[in-house]
Length: 231
Ligand SMILES: *Cc1c(COP(=O)(O)O)cnc(C)c1O
Image (tube, rainbow, N blue to C red):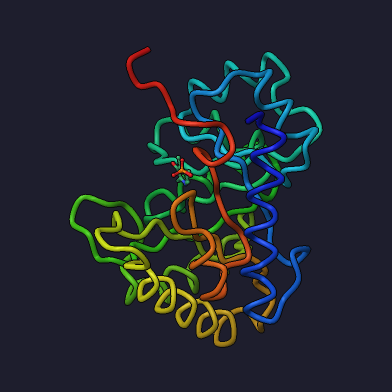
């Protein structure tokens, strides 16, 4: 199957899950996770109607930007971001989804101020409380949201999470539901219900994520095929 056919299949599954949760497919934002796929693949995905492309690695993103890989769609940064690479992402990505520490938040503020722009971000939550994973602990997220609201050069548009690797089918539903409750709570308490995005769900679990309230899914393998890590 081609990328275009894969996207059509993903869209059908998204639409079904959206209907089951009382929404329409237009309510769910599809980010193509294009890591390790070349500029031509990115352009095919954009032509087939992904809402954005998401990259994980700064170096790869920079190289593909120079090849006009993302022309025609917004670019999101979705991967782990080191503080010393913030300068290469602020002002390039329409949305940085992976702001998971106060230090990183402050670094983005500083760089956005330097560039005289306002950077859209999502706060990343470590919903499974995993030791090795970045992101704010669920109980820290409210304080992070309060801090971010005071920073003039960042604009929080929502929350993002990467749950633990699933060990049984639908195993992440509990995390998606917990994340949705946190999103609703913080949105109401701190943002006057003006947050727009709850980014959760990948190739293996995006339908469950949508059923639990996600409105932004990040899908790689199901669009581009398996990634070749031997290269
Ligand atoms: C790679 C990646 C995805 C997509 O993963 P698939 O399982 O290939 O769909 C989603 N989110 C992030 C942060 C990723 O790094």
